[in-house]
Length: 250
Image 1: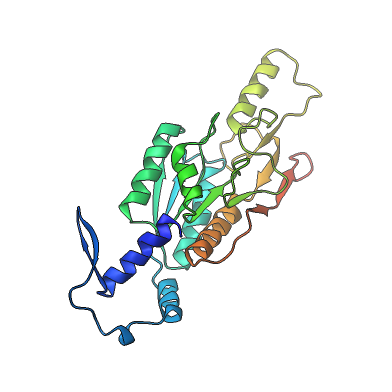
Image 2: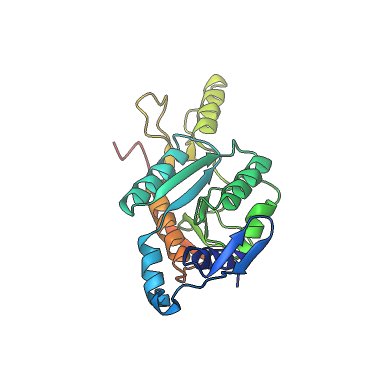
């Protein structure tokens, strides 16, 4: 039994009056037990828990218009449809902050599980690994952890974010365009990127891979809710992408 499951079991017993939880000492069998035959059956408790879903957490590096905003919109829309509350925390692209945020959310008992858009780095932070080992409800958005059995939602056939072979994002692509133009070496060259933001003031429109980040966010919520309900989920789920060529798609 994982620590998360054990904690939820104690919370249920405390709510039903079977145990008494004393801060700093632990949990003890109640001095006066309730009528046990009147307590809900395991099946009824499961149905009740599914109705009472409360809150999930979403941890992400930033609010970039190219990807993160769409992902957040998908998560927010799906949680609203399911009647869930949502706590969103940014890590500002720093792994030490990511670790602190995850620990804070999970220890607070405010959330039933986490969706994490992990920070790129040379190693996985300890908090993420701890959640995986404890089998806590967790969905990784946009990337899977190589060698780590954690539920993840990614773009179909996509490489993990941060791969050295990955095409530049929208801001890097604009910079490449300006450098080539200043050197007079732009003619005949095609510049490609990921996640070009759909903004009216974008200076250029490039050949790009458009990921369906909203669908990814919605699917992440469904996978997290399934884990909270102790349902089986696949290790990796994928969302299709499309190639947008501005020369033919206008």
